[in-house]
Amino acid sequence: MPHKHLKRLMADRSGNFAVLSGLMLPVLLGFAGIAMDVTHVMDEKNRAQGLADAAALAVASAMAEDGDMSAKEAEGLGLNFFVSQSLAADSSMTPEQRAEAAIRLKESTKLQTFTTSAGNAQTYDVRITSNYDVPMNGLSSVLGFKTLRIAVDSRASSGRQGNALSMYLALDESGSMAWDTTTVDPVTPTKKVKKQRKEKYPCPGNETQSCERVVDEWVDAPSYIVKMASLKAAAGVMFDELKKADPSTTLIRVGADSYDDKTKSEQKIAWGTNDVSKYVNKLPDKPDGGTDASGALTNALAALKSANTTEKSAHDGKTNKSFERFIVFMTDGEMTGNSGLWNQKIHDQVLAICQQAKNDKDAAGNGIKIYTIAFMAPAKGKELLEACSSGKDDYYYEPNSMTQLVQTFGEIARKAAKTGTRLTN
Image 1 (tube, one colour):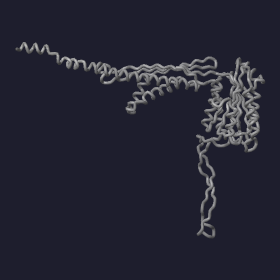
Image 2 (tube, rainbow, N blue to C red):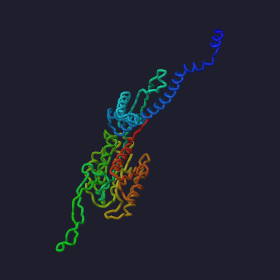
Image 3 (tube, rainbow, N blue to C red):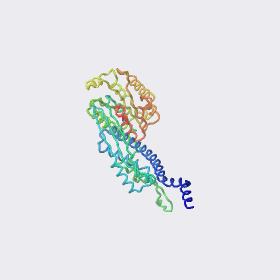
């Protein structure tokens, strides 16, 4: 009988599945953990690659926009961008943990920049590489896997390319250019202004009644930057951008003429921006008069028109095979002449000069391009400048603050000099 029971036990297979399941369960759980971790790591790698691409593009763009950013500055910009964005998604870390993670990530990330110059063109190449470990979950650790390594590699390039050009600025110095902008002066943010108020006092001879009188008092008020100071600052930004585009002063020639209801003495077109910068800085701090841009625009057209060979001869002397012609026409008002009322005749005259300039074709068949800036201008001023421009989308601007005016002049300089950023990745 005992032998029969033993044989029966040995022949019984009913518990094998449970035994095998018990033996295989850790392995199965481990593979399930690895599957989840691989999915998570691939998502993390894609996110990290996207952030590296964005950081490389940002650095390449900044280097081209700045023109003289050092390698150390570029590295700091790129690493801070990459690290801060990488850690932004994890809200579970304490400040101490976040600081430690930032240090580790910076140590495992490398940013390199390379600048290549050829004549007036510069190319900026940026490469970001990063390698770091991502912890795996507890299920994966059953098979001995603690971390998976992520590696990302991103490259971007940008460029600044100089463009031969002749530019003439027609700038408003009428009385309204002495008016305030909406920008508070950071140096002297307040000023004393006289304010009148009414006060009551006992009437002489009859103190039971109250009399009223007007009293002057000095109070603090915001000190706003005036339009003329804004114009000078904005023009300075433009000249700096043109210098970056033409450091050897062989590509860019600039002149200017200002106006109120009269045309002022002009600054003849010359190489570089030194002369025109001095001219703009000497514009009156307290301008006055009406508005008539016809004379300044006539001088601009005369200087740049194709029949005048002065500019072509000057560029030929610098071996510039071709050059572009630009007028920058800025006003904060409408055409009034020496009155305070809009003048249809002057308005139409200015518009006709703009049209002549756009129709004046050079040897390549290109007219003079006109950038127009309606700075905090009324409706008639905006209407005129939009019509005068070489196209509303690319050549017409309506800045309504000092900040926007500065941005406008800088953008025009970069567009004209063709120093916009070229990015590849």
